[in-house]
Image 1 (cartoon, helix red, strand yellow):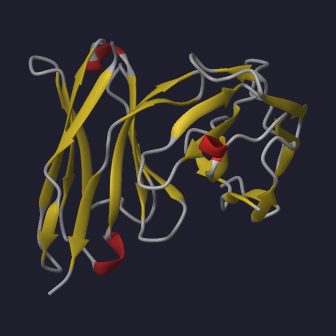
Image 2 (tube, each protein chain N blue to C red):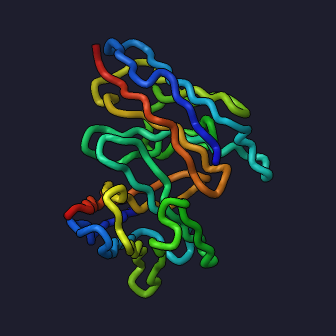
Image 3 (cartoon, chains in turn green, purple):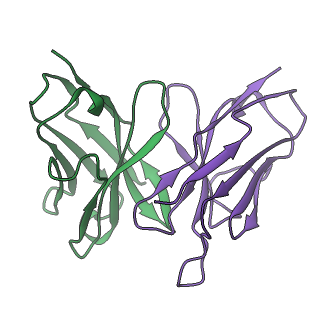
Length: 116
Length: 112
């Protein structure tokens, strides 16, 4: 059974850092196309970052230079390192496994609040 | 970036009646590989999004057959043949043709 279990959300001050984790089972994170998508309170969905199996990464312009997507194949876990956080980064962050050009399997979400 | 536009943004429906949501893209979603990566997601209150339909019309595993997708190029439709209470939530169209995915604004389906 495919599962994505997220951890690492919380409250952080502007300018601070946070790392989100997404532990997967039922498939190998290193062999799959993985993404992060976020949802600000009461808003729609916004794509944040991707990681291809070959190692290529890309980011939304709003987070480029501040966020880093990575994986640890030995732990079968995906990460999102978030630095220089801003209030507008406040959102629920979802990790997901991309299949057929879309988000096939989603984590339960991790709430990130950036506030002083 | 490709802009995805959904209509309507809110859809009150009577139980057992059909519902339809439209989605248009600012440019063609036909990929160079010949596929059209248009999908539909459902987000029930308090839950993460769930994939319903991928590549225009393919139902994902476990999705009831009352959900169907159609369209081509830049115009797409999600139809629910007979709305059930569990269908309440927000529906998003999404394009995966470009590397940077983009989503529609969401359509809130509610029961009259």
